[in-house]
Length: 100
Image 1 (cartoon, helix red, strand yellow):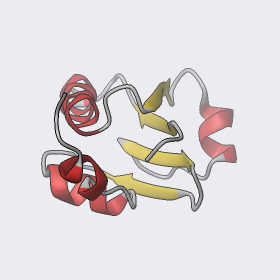
Image 2 (cartoon, rainbow, N blue to C red):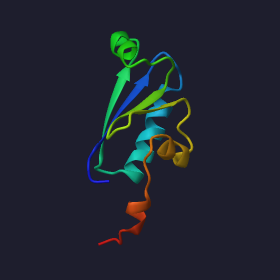
Image 3 (spheres, helix red, strand yellow):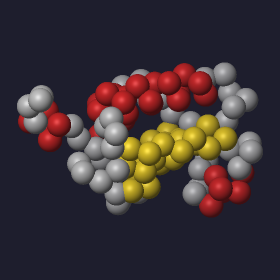
Image 4 (cartoon, one colour):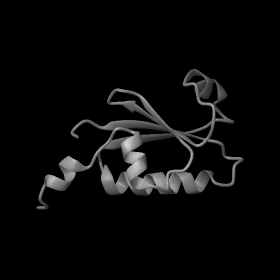
């Protein structure tokens, strides 16, 4: 993957698990896509119109905006492989590149 991946994470700060969702997701992204992603965190209670425009029905929801196609994951981000697969992102190319 050479282009940056644009991601939007919709959270609701009133929910107790919002910080854990952010930390878990950032850990996955830093491990698998370091330097290849942009993450925008959107608090639905502060930006309800944006959430409505993007058809967000539950939080946390992660949206891969680009590269196309748009994909959404709702809920738990604890399974790294499921998150990457759900977003249509793979690490095959990264694994084939030798360090150095």
